[in-house]
Amino acid sequence: MTGPDEAEDLAELLVGIQRLIRRRLRQDLTGPRLRGAQVELLRLVLARPGIGVAAAAKELHLAGNSVSTLVNQLVTAGLLERGADPQDRRAVRLTVTREAEERLEGWDIRRGDLVRRQVAGLAREDQAALAAALPSLRRLAEGLHQELEGT
Image (cartoon, rainbow, N blue to C red; front, side, top):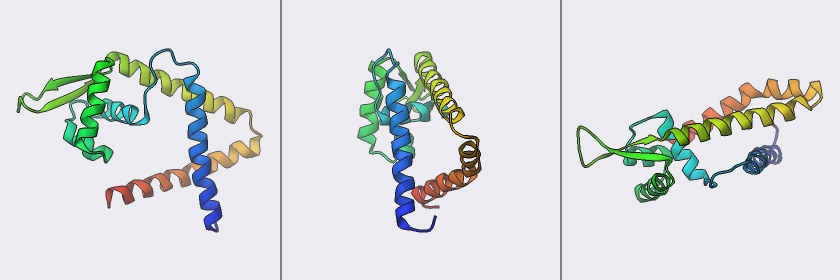
């Protein structure tokens, strides 16, 4: 990338691709639509069962009351469970429900199928270029993560 225009093009393309993937996958959804922050919280709790609200807020870079609101919404929807911390009965520990696990897994499978199908429809040169770009995109993601975390 040689200039700011290319960096802006990359940023716009990444956002656009993500938006199009979401829009296409939402066409087949049967349950209620989840917002991005709700999905992020579910994915975090799935990866770290038993995480508390404060730790989730810190990890997601959100205010504690915002995460509490998300927790209440997801508990009401039957996608998240709140349990008391055995060490401190005042603290809450979060776990995803089986329904949430299945929903996230189904989304991931359908997303993978969609992207594979679209990539398979590209010319071999484009497929090779995308494959070659993956390590660079991973490093870009890692750099963004490190900047966000201040490391």
